[in-house]
Image (cartoon, rainbow, N blue to C red; front, side, top):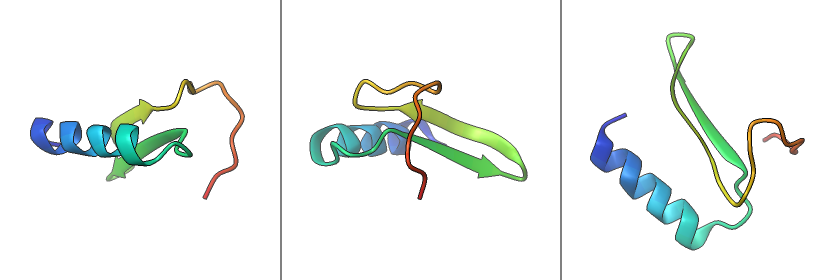
Length: 49
């Protein structure tokens, strides 16, 4: 993802969505973006949608 798009996405999540634990974006079976929010990490158990 482009840096401006990534920053805009992260800012929106931090300001408006307190229920998002993390986001992973895949392209051609490769993770192109991965980040965790709201004091969550990749090792925390979460409900996935």
